[in-house]
Image (cartoon, rainbow, N blue to C red; front, side, top):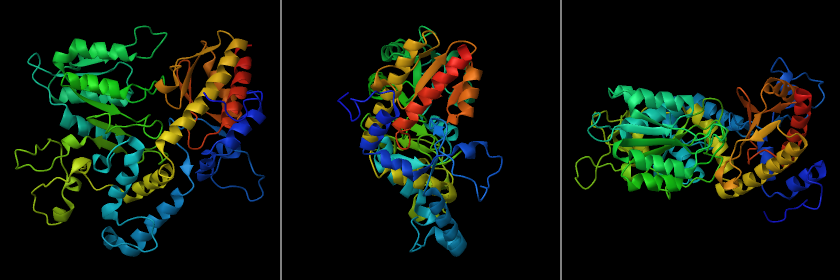
Length: 466
């Protein structure tokens, strides 16, 4: 890394962390979010006592599980409520002059326009719709079209430690086609359990080995457990060299790293919007469908209509309300939509995407690399003082990981460490029996957050191991 402000200071001091925050051109985005306070985390009711002293913010490093709330979310949701209250059904079509939101009929398109630069897509390749697993099912119903067993391509390649919902979705899609998951699922497993990442070369070799029978590949952009950032471009190109379709679950990648889904020629992708994209628990999710599969002319032989499960929100807007029962798909990913989306939910998605569109994913990615490198530096120094107490299972190459370091603790330490972190107002994520996942989100976390976490973690390890 180039020399940064504060490099002449002791990196393990508050002054150093504060100097990095002061010099960071993106640090002001923190004020666009509500960080829960220490009192918020422990207060038994939602109401704040009128005479309570201000409480400091907690150290929130769990954006890989649930992002914090943007300050503007309440305003946009209230704007929607006003539109609904004052316009009722007319709000589908009529602009409200003082509203930051478009009519209900167009709010999903507005969200897609804001989402496209976040995932590196063209606007017509993105739709904001549904939920992550439901979208994976919709996409696999379109892109997984297996041959009969033993007669061609009928298997799906995925990682052995996929997020459970992905595993269940793949398994049930296979069963839906009358096939046996035990035979039709090709699982990628680490060669050495002590190092749970999957080298790109291993993935490519597995594709080569099973190329003649793979109908589909589904992999994560970033692996939820280790934080590994897969080489999407290389793996996608390799799959295509064998004529294999490939999709990506970008739940932990969207809003985290600078995806280039269009440029990398990804076939399809899906993601949720409640992690790094800060749209609230269970928020409306998103899909990417490469423009090659968004052709709309079902009559012309020059324009192949890619089959999909259809619903009326994927129907052409100009004829949707004519009720002809003649489906005319909208161009691009919008033609894969099924039901009308919740405008209430989309208001929360738009609120967060507005913040993202005030910067760029390239800038956020560079800030994220600096934050995570600082965390790694502090942890490495701690490991020298406490050998054998923990190790980092996330790749050490900054470009091979996102905004997450997964720390594997020595056996028996996890519960005590978590209890200490919780008492000190540090919020991280755990994966039993021995891993904590720490995610400095580039939009709202600070170098000071990272330093405070490392200091409290060291005290927790001291207590747990001593």
